[in-house]
Image 1 (cartoon, rainbow, N blue to C red):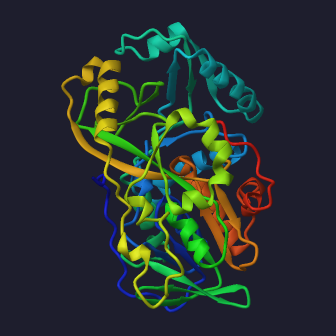
Image 2 (image 1 turned 180 degrees about the vertical axis):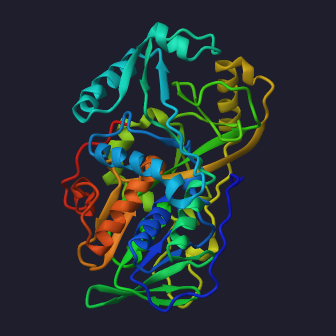
Image 3 (image 1 turned 180 degrees about the horizontal axis):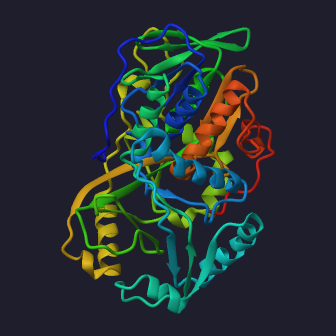
Length: 441
């Protein structure tokens, strides 16, 4: 059920002391470790399972500025610049290509929303253009569809989910960081309201700075230390085809979205189709998320399953740091994909592109998209705990924004000039009532 991903070797010895410990080796944590190590800081990158094995390898692979919430847009722009540099800096192909992204629809309201977004894009000089129905149909030749209109984000693109986090972790190691897989962080050593170390299942590391980039697990980790972080995760099912005829590099339609992989296969998903499991954590933060649930009710299904009793949103209590923790019981969060969702996704893709009729499914998987109540990430120090930076709640935008999020988290952890204004991503907005509206995209 897990998607194929490139593996990274672990370092055998845990360091006794480092400048920064990064907890969670998805794309955000791996990018943060890379930028810290590149600046000469000693870094330990901890991962309870495998580098990049959770949501960082379970997404579409899109790297975009198009349709970003205005609060995220400056970070998205910088992230695109960072994506473009990795191949040269690290000496490995991370799969990033500025292929352009094509959106096509017959929904007049959706097209109007894309047109409205262009006002923000023009102010920042983003290269995007609206498509007439004829232009959208011409750009999606092979579908046989006629479209009302669309949009083409000319300079956006894609990267390879199987490579991104592992290559960044490799880059961090080249610059001196150590990588520790199957090494769960059980908790923090705290003295007088400040971080003094990290307790892992393999021993403790002294440090005065920690970045938590734990994805869907971040809220539970925070709660163990008395920190409130409203977070909810929706479960989505995605598939990857066998090698297929060349269609488009990246296409969104209301029926499904397709992304061509480096080997000629396609990642295919249905945008917004997800299951929200009822869990103890979900009930705890239900009021915080009510505006989002109301806005996105049509796209969500609700269910009760194993995640009520185990996983990042289950009832965990205050686990002891000298015994096995929930992080060690689930090394990789790997929920079973919905068979009906996978069948529907492939059926829609074949109806959209007849050339896929005889193309089989190579892999299918499910993953948890962790969100904040306003669908904007938290990249921020947390009041009351000096030396602790939270980088989570990416709300389905974490892959494309990942290099920017990691860079900003690294900046905040060591007091460097932030790559962008960090105020839209402050943690305090979620607990003091100052958060803005739910993100549109």
